[in-house]
Image (cartoon, rainbow, N blue to C red; front, side, top):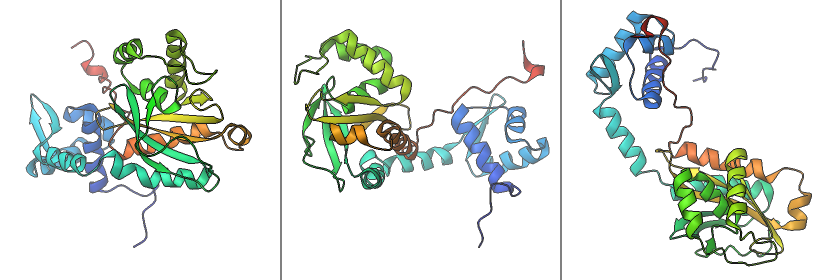
Length: 268
């Protein structure tokens, strides 16, 4: 069977999936709002939501559609069978293959990052990222990336209690400078470390989010400073792109926005 391109006509299944996607992102919507979002006639939307309701994928309450118990069961099954250690490794191996450098995945343990996965690229030399090793939040790209993924209040509280140990001459041990670095990482999508933990290495890290929008891990790419600085492709965007792909596979989406009210409902 030849795959249908995006330019082809959409069928009932496509429209039903769009309705489910809208409600996944927005939480609830009236029939009129679904008509506007999906872009088909009211009668077509009525037929679709009635079939989805009969199969328990949708439920109607107070004039608004919400995801039903069948959708909830499917979502819970997906979450149960999809965690970061299941999803991330293939994409991290691909990143290590593309760059030739060492790629790692870390999770929070106390106020440190613990490496739970590592892939060594073909160019990699020994780097200080052994599996199971613990790393400080303030002096590593993976740690600063994790801080950048935290909610602002929790990030502030975490930084306040960090010991801010000095590892090299480049280690940032001033809390205000750390906050600036974390804010910059949050703005651009990745964190950087230039010899702050290991004087001879440069690292780039990015946070990974789960389906609830909570930071669940962080990934990093590390290598000798001279080679990382001379690389043709920028490592920051590459690690941010990979982290975003992992997050997407975990169910994370940053597209959720309230449905804009239709003109006739404004002021109601």
